[in-house]
View 1 (cartoon, protein in one colour):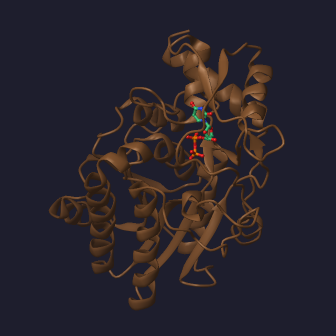
View 2 (view 1 turned 180 degrees about the horizontal axis):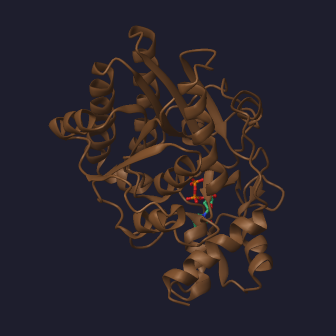
Length: 342
Ligand code: UDP
C-alpha cells in the first residue's frame, strides 16, 4: 500500500507543526496549508529540519476561499484532513464575533464540502475542552454534557463539532473524529518548533516563559480564592508532542477502518489536574529559574477546574500522555531561549 497523504490546515502553527512532524515520522505524506495570518515560517522551517524532509508541500491559502480549497484537493490526493486553521483568541472573539464565526465556520465548511466531493471525507477536527464549560462532574468524560459557550470562539468549536456530526449522519462518505484538547503546552524536544504568540500572550505557559526571559515584567496569577486546594484554577496541561501523537493514532484509526462509529470524540489530556500555582512551581524547579509572579484578580470567563478522563483515548486510540511535566516545561523554556537567541 502506498503512502497516504494527510492535509494539515493551519499546519504552520503551534499544534499543526507538531502534528506534521509526528505524521511524517509515522510514514505519512503531509500537505501543509496555512494563510499565515497568525504565524510565520519559523515552525514550518523547523518541521523540515526535524524531519530532514525539505520538500514538504506547502500551500499558502485561505480556507475561506472555496476555489483555493477546490484547487488544493485537485492538486493532491488527500486521504484525510486535519483542520487547525482557525482563530483562537477568546478575548478577541468576544470583541469581534463575526471575524470568528466567519473564519472558523466557513473554512471548516469549505474543507468538508470539497472533501465530500472526492468521495472519501475523513475529517479530524481540532476541538477543545472549552465545549464543556464549567463542568458539573470531574474529570470530564466525552459524554459529559456540553455547556453554552462563554465566547464566540468556544461557540465555533461547538458548532463545528455539530456540523461534523450532522454530516456524518447524513453523508455515508464522511467520517469524523473530534479531538477535544485540554491545555496544550511545551515544545518539541529539538526546540526547533514551539508556540509563537503574537503580542502579549493570553496563555499561561508562554506568559511564564516570556516573564522568565525578561520580556514581561511579572506573571499575574489570575485568582487565588477559587474553591481549589491552593486557591488557583485547576487544568489538565497536556504536552504538545503527546497531543500531536494522538492525531497520528486518530488518523490511523480512520484510514485503517478501525472506527466503531463514523463520528467519534476523544478527550486528549493527561487525566491529572495541576493548579496554576503547581505549574509555576514546577517550571521554576524544572528549569532552575526564579519567576517573578503576583496574584491578580480573577480573569473573566475562566472555569474553576477542568481535567480529562482520557480512558477512552487510552483504550480506543491506544494513546496515552507520556512526557513528564518537568520535561515539557524544560522544552517550553528551551524554545523561549532559542527564540531569544540564548
Ligand atoms: N493564567 C494566569 N495568568 C496568565 C495566563 C493564564 O493565571 O497570564 C491562568 C488562567 O487564569 C487559567 C490558566 O492559567 O486558570 C490557564 O489559562 P490559559 O489561558 O493558558 O488556558 P485556558 O484554560 O484559559 O484555555
